[in-house]
Image (tube, rainbow, N blue to C red; front, side):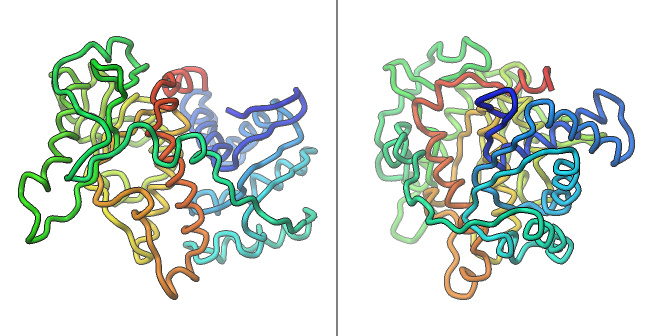
Length: 356
């Protein structure tokens, strides 16, 4: 969904806009029974323009191959129907999706952008307002195997009685940790120190699933099935490994389907990534954005802190500047998702699913 300041204009984060486009394409086929790519796109364009013909996009950026291949048809369709497009970006059009998969198919869209829109260079703000809001690391804190910012209480509590509105509070009124750092064990690290973060991660999963049956299940996504390895269907909580989510070809539609089905998602074995693993990084970016869009409570057990999760050095850094910038935004979003303010928000995935 897009936010707008008047009936005639929409102002929306670009990645959020593209997530909504993928959702509308899915609903066009599954709910409205529309067949054929041209008919589906016509339906989506109509829905977009009903919300306003002046489209203002914040942080215009492309990291997903599915978006890259769709954008020319989408934007030419909007402009041909009378839309006015305004966008901010930290990349000039010619720098968009640089180094991305099948970029040669994206270049005609870059040419169209430069021919159709007026490109104005501006200095970019260096302020990250998400980090300002969350105080730099988020009130929920983290566990790194040595100490933690908040005591963790394993006693049962009644924090989960409002389904889909879980705030992850313990009996003492503090939000639970939602990011656990399980660094690789070395010869000087004791076994219990290494396992402490994982034990807390597993304990929180047991607490939020309330000893209900845990089983695998599937979600229907655009006429195919998405496998969910661990889920409490009673509590609407799921658990994946990082490679379950990002190790295979998945896109925004898959991640949105997860966010629309489960209000809390646990992800274990999240590694530190290098520039050799940009496809994994891109999928993680899309996954986090989808969880954020649905206000899912994300619980992570990772090898490193968010700021260390994706690092590229030397030549790799120069070749993957889009991914580096996009991941920096994802990192700050992950910080926000650990904050008390975010954790108290109501899950909207089921609302999004039912109303399209």
